[in-house]
Image (cartoon, rainbow, N blue to C red; front, side):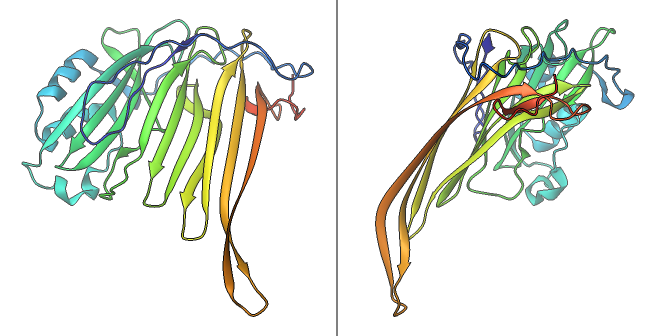
Length: 302
């Protein structure tokens, strides 16, 4: 079952909107490959430095009321987000403005038994610097005490004053287990002549989030050629762990032709290529953690 949450990394903060639920896909793929069952997560003991006592809803109200970067920095400090405040000259001013929203989601990320809080801070700090950072809070036995798990796929605070900050969309999916969920992350970053994209999946293991699948693509134009990519990844099957179906295509147009005399001519002819593949959750070595590999590459140790 897919339980998506959609959050955009945009300069101006606003309420995050959940996307409609998507039903599980139908099964398919290489009948000769059997994906190994996802092992249950090992018992996890939270290190003392990652323990925090707080109320997500109270923090949400406090951030909504904060208008200065110094206030936001103080409120977010317990979450250990690793934000590079000292790298931004604009943040030196005590009165530097800020407008940050805290999104609070619920999902079963670290274990199937307990529902976690997923917190995401997004907005603008120090006048014009985009922020998008977050953590997973896993409830511990003591009331109001949580264990922090960082979300490394979020960009944090942009301190390079770029005109093209990255955009990130994440969702929760039941991919490797029927109850515990993983993060699906869609990344996009544009520039004047190109766009980089990536689709990845992240699973909790022993208290941290580990990447179990990633596919990158690029589109762009120059004076002589252009490249456009179209990539989709979707979960398939009713059995767990589910499979991932990749569909990809690339269209290239234009090339330079150098003649014997040294003259250079341009050809605007286009070419296209496409591919479809199925990925299975498996191990490539006895002591290696499972990840998604092409199903027909029979390196799985079952």
